[in-house]
Amino acid sequence: MNVNDLMNMPELKEGLTLISGEAGLDRNIRWIYFADCIQCVKGKQNPADFIHGEEIVIITNVSLTEHDDVVLSLIQAMNQKNIAAVVINHGQISQQVSEYCEQIHLPLFELSENLHLIDLSQIVCRELMQEENTVSSRERLFSEILNMDEINKEEILAQASYLGVSLSGPFFVVVFHLYSRKDEKDPFPSRQLSVETAALKASVKTAFRPYVPKHMLVMDQMDNVLALVPWKMLNRELLSSVIDQICKTHTSHFNRIVRAGIGLPYEYLEDFRISYKEAKDALQIHRLFPDDKTDIYYESLGIYSVIMQIHNGRFMDEYIDSHLGPLIAADQVQEGNLLHTLEVYLACNANANDAAEKLFLHRNTMHYRINKIRKILNNNLTDLSTYLELELAFAFYRFRKQ
Image 1: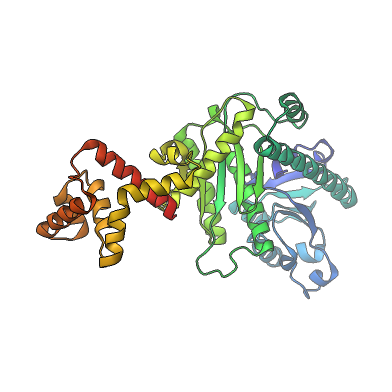
Image 2 (image 1 turned 60 degrees about the vertical axis):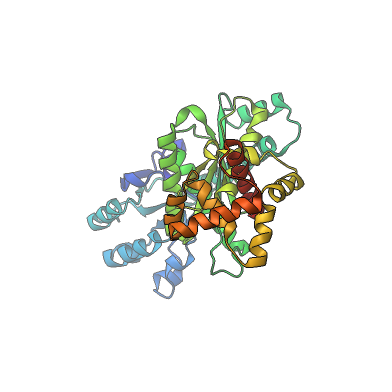
């Protein structure tokens, strides 16, 4: 539930009036927090210390609200922890407070005298618990679609309809992966992982909300967040922009790299799990060639999309040995780098001069190495079929090494 949903609740329409901060109506709501405890009013405790994020903060005590500097300081500190909204009693909101909330895009509501706090808290908490149950049901549905060996299509579609989820048309799976930081001995303490995946999941829902149906299937799974995205709703450019926003926002907040693997779209429900595997494969292959891209498409993997279908590791190892084995052995004996030389040579389309420049070698040295490689492999390296075989061998080698 977000702040906009709160505004549209019939029981609250007459009791809450939006004063400012309309630009922040997409903020998520997790719970309610009353900032009027005796310790806080007396200045012994800072209410911001009790904020965990995404709370509706209610301030009704006049001894707080009559001092603009106190309220502004309080709102500033709590907003840094990503609260959802602020609610203040009728007649207690100053122009300065209103303007500040507008400036930081924080929804500020005026609470009517006709709406009692006990009623407000019961209405909101009931709605949040009901939504939590529904969200859990949607996540279980998503998990069943992706992980069950045999899907009862009619039953799944019936559950989806009951939960307000549309599964008609092609869908693809996006897997957001949280990468561990190099400086962490224990990269994902359980609480930290839970906090980060929850935040990432909320970011995914918020970022996709303008483009996809309201009840999008999203769930967390260890250090991943999965999303089922309708294919017709976003073109590739827009999808990449949304994903980039999600990943970079999380990185700026938590100092942790996030990347997204994107599977192919599929029409039929039972094929969504294929898109899920493809999204994971895309992330796995990206580890071979890491870069700053936040979105990795399975359709862009080239030959590696074929390699991911080979489940016989022994076949790949034997292929590597038959095509590159003598060169690997020669490097081990002579502590050389002929294998890398050949890899660069092939990447330069068998152009020895270009390869020499990339390796910072004299042309004569490069030609000497190529001749040596030809002798070791007993191959002149000029045949197109040989070129393709060696490229495939190197692809296997990189994949198995990773």
